[in-house]
Length: 189
Image (cartoon, rainbow, N blue to C red; front, top):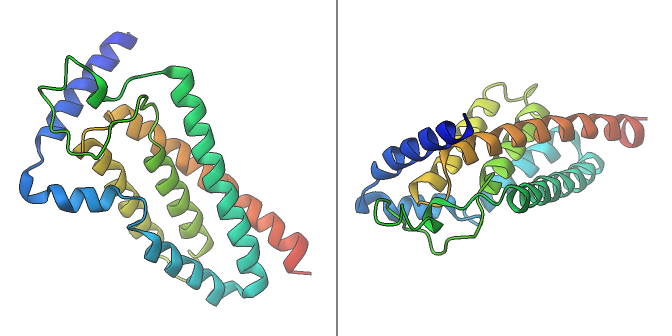
């Protein structure tokens, strides 16, 4: 059963990865770069500051730092635990894929880019939903694009992405709840 699932995952990866073209490669490398979205994070922090104030912003900064550290470290635990090679690290696949990433890490299950971007999207989207009701949909779409970029450049299977997005959504929701608790306890007397 697991072997069949992994076989389907590989076939889907090969299909999705083959959709790329040299014309778009640079764009997808920019999208997958962790530093590209610093301005987006700055805008989201500004919106949180604007709607909640400075004391709350300090809580958000701490919570977001904890959230990203948490998702990143749990991702690493899963990668070391499952030890599933990335597609770019599979000798059987290397001639069949479009590998355009700068490097190929050792293990890929599950995607840290996917979990971190989804956690940030869910967290910010829920915190700001009262003020910007469609923002969460924009952020979820952004997270999906970041996640797909990992398939495009050849470093993750679709199952790595789906599990990363799922874990990120759960993490984002839990840290959203933690923020509400901390705001009630320490900011909103």
